[in-house]
Length: 135
Image (cartoon, rainbow, N blue to C red):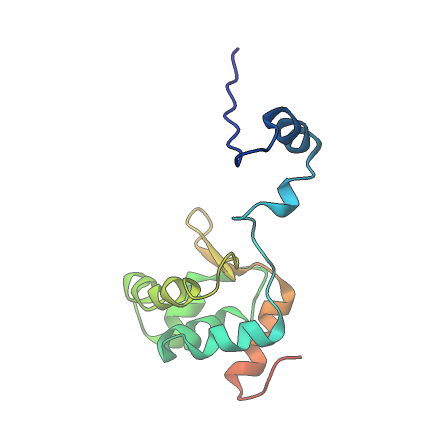
């Protein structure tokens, strides 16, 4: 087996030092594209940029944050899976305004469930959907 690693450095930086930092894991926490967790205020701002239909879908998912079946979302909204996916596109559009923030949910096509990736997100969505500010 052969592994090739390319290390890009700025002028004057020691590539061997950068490699050692990478192997030790110290530079991973400083990576430019590392995900940064949401704060309640940032999440509220993100929520305000979502289309109302996407907010409605996430509010349904928040009732079962550990895994909300697609059937529950379709029953609650009256939309098909494709319509739901299209309406959730505003999540990606809004996310572009928040550098390095993770998606708040994931879709598992095997189990056909939406999962909020952090219990706090579910709490925040429920509060925001009811017109309250998350804490």
